[in-house]
Structure formats: structure tokens, C-alpha cells
Length: 242
Image (cartoon, rainbow, N blue to C red; front, top):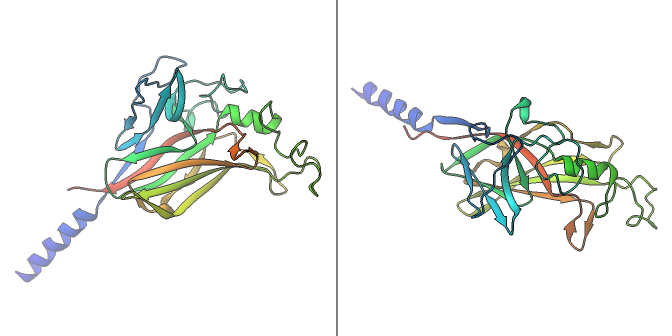
């Protein structure tokens, strides 16, 4: 009898600790060709247990996420807020999400662990980093901002970085993950132009994730680099309720 009780106790413990694996791909959303998600009442959208915030005001996408099937790899300005340099979604999928700095993903299942996320540069940011525009400098170029320093012209150590922080029970966690969308600090300057998988498991269990961008090109406390990036295939797990 004792062995039977022990067996069922172990079985119960194992069932309680089982993890449900899930993947937010955005492919279940219906879109007209060459379009994007818009909610004039700033309603979030949900893929599985992942809830993506969305802010729309005054006829413009103001913040958060928007899923899209716009495939513009050319237009280098604010007329192209939804295109990614990688052309389509991760693995060539039809739908992906665009995000702005300070975007938030909430999870309806408590104690969720986000294992990985695919990210990439928007076409807008990619083009501006390489060539600059009226608001942002070309990365590595010190004209107007680095002049007069000891840094040689064309060698400014620029970067464009995504930082991911986790929240649990309303409190920010100590662990975070950083990913450089562009890095000119070393000898091998690069700008990401394809989907890259970012391991986020080190953040541990969360009820939400906050994404924000950092750039070396700043004015008056604000980044000049276009604050947009692509997101796809959010892989997460949570304890089974069975």
C-alpha cells in the first residue's frame, strides 16, 4: 500500500510540473494583402496565451505591436513602418509582427518562461543606420556629433540594441537579455538583415516582457535611430494545469 501511495504521489507531482510548449507565429491572423493590424481603440491582440499591446492615436500607430504582411525592403523612411529588411517573416512565413520601443507582451498563464524570440531590423532602421537621414547620422560617421573627439572620422563606435526585461507579479526582474541589431564598436561592423533567434530563457518565469531600444545616436535624451524592429516565433512554456 505504501508503494502504491508513493507511486501516485510521484505521478501527481510529475503531472503538476509538466510544461506546455507554445509558439506565437501570428500566422492565424487574417490580413488583406500588403496590410497591417490597426485598432482605433488601441485594443491588444492575442496569439495563444501571448497578449501584445497596441496603441493607435490620431490616425497613427503610436506604440506596441502590429502584425503585418507588408514586405517593403526598399523604402527608407517613415512611409515604411512595417517592412523588415529580411523581406518576410522568420523562415519565409507570411505574417510577422513589428514593434516599437517600450512594447509589452503579457501572458495569460502565470509562471510563463519565454524560451526564445526571433527578431530583425526594420527596413527603416536598417537603411538609416547605413546611410543616415535628416534626423539620424550614418553609423560610424562622426560629422556633427563626434567631431573634435579623438575618434577618427568614420570610426564612431555606434550601436543599436534591443533590451528585453521580464516582470513577475508586477516587479521587474534582475535578469535581462540584450541583442545588438547593429554593432560598430569593434572591428567587424554589422547591421542585422535577417531573422535572428534570441535566447531569452535566462530571464526565467515571467508574466510579461518589456522590449526597449537603445542607440548611440541620441539627441536630448531620445534616440535618433528609427525605433522599430521585427518580431516572430515567440516560443514560450508554462506549467500544465493537468
